[in-house]
Length: 223
Image 1 (cartoon, one colour):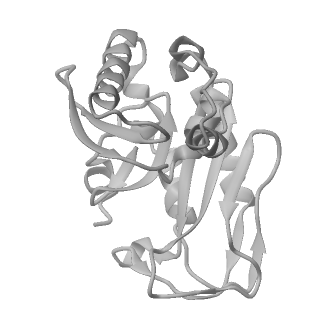
Image 2 (cartoon, helix red, strand yellow; image 1 turned 90 degrees about the vertical axis):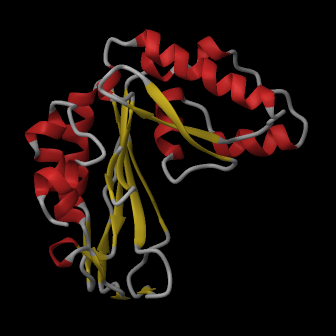
Image 3 (spheres, one colour; image 1 turned 135 degrees about the vertical axis):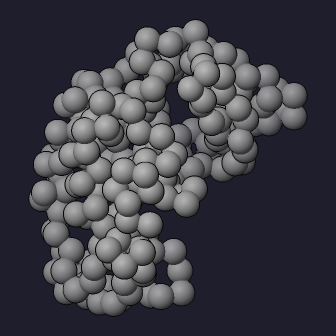
């Protein structure tokens, strides 16, 4: 993920920093399974790790719910997590074995969080009325949002107003598809971070898969 003050702005899978490191991926999967079994956990949930340059990974937290970025997982695994969390809760047995849902073997997905905010002003929120809206579409493009023309974005809540998710055979194709999707997206009436997300997607360090949790502050210097 690309983060600002520990808040994710962009998520992708598989993680480019683990390219060719299936051994580390398997250790992560095993640790997550062991943790879930130890507490008797059932249903959808998310375990987060921090990966360090020394090749070690560290447990950060577990969220006992779906995450904002669950569409990324759904794209790379081809499993509807919302549907299956409801079915499992109803007593239906989950039909997939672990080796059938390994994300590392299934293409690439990227999600950009679109926020009503002004990056050039320290990401100041930008509430207001949406005067015109055009959303991207097409094969492998998904937009999760409640926006419509005339919608008033309030100031009392989180500034995220949409999620754009793309899916492609590999990371290079996914990056190009996301750039095209953001080019097509239009939100008028409020300021958004659309251009800022595009800058991330064009940054050489990010494109090479070398971005870390300090990427925005260190490279783009907007904070």
